[in-house]
Amino acid sequence: MTTVFLTAAELILACMGCMYLVGLLAKDNSLVDVAYGPVFIVACWGAWIFSPVAPDHFRPLLLLVLITLWGVRLGLHIGLRHRGRGEDFRYRTFREQWGTTLVWRSFLQIYMLQGAVVLVIALPVLLTIGAPGPGLRAADLLGSVLFFCGFGFEAIGDWQMMRFKQDGANRGRIIQEGLWRYTRHPNYFGEALLWWGIFFIGLGSPLGLWGLASPLAICFLLLKVSGIPMLEAKYIGNPQFEAYRARTNAFFPWFPKKKPDNSSTTRNPEHS
Image (cartoon, rainbow, N blue to C red; front, side, top):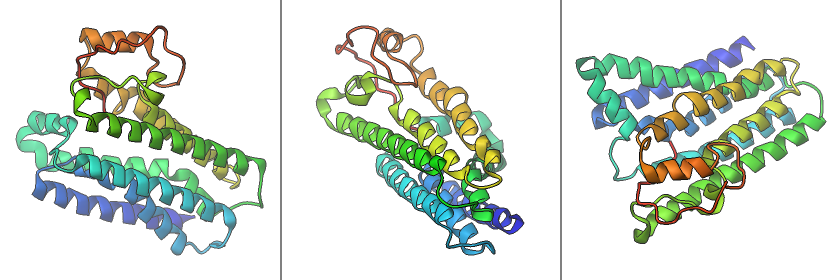
């Protein structure tokens, strides 16, 4: 188990160190978001390759396939979305606030902090690689269903947002159709759901319960820290956004409280 975690930590450190140099040279720290999904792939596959424990067990292989599917899609989506846009507003804010301390604070508070987050969130996968557990269980099936439901929710939500923004007629409007009619952040809901699925699959490991830190961390970050609060802060007080917020759940999908107002003139929230 020690080998698994040390290998994953070393690979995460190397990836984040490289991304720090890229961000420093490009003067764009939001490039770290493009690497977020792929870093999981590198760390988890690397840990599996060097694991001394039953590398052919179906459970870690299942999780590695799911992580790869998620990480590749997310990396491609954020990379294509970022192309030609420059640094994301959240990272620009940090750049302005940190001033002369930017070099070391960005290394510690963006890259190293995100690396630590990756290690925590990858817990179910790493624990399963180190101790795969017995054969197929009901939790494996439940986790797989939750993963694909969450993955579909996230991917469809991102696709709907992309199509909406590509239509020039929607410039300055808030998307209120498709999954975005039922939740202001379908991609975040899908992200949380798929990690709960990975946690349930990881319960097949004797140490799987420790993986609970993963979905709890995801939910905390999305609901309280860098997800919904940071994205919606710039819209607070805007009448049109307040109307959208009043009738549409922030996270859990549900029917809107009343008919959406399609005359919105504000910019739409975006996937982080």
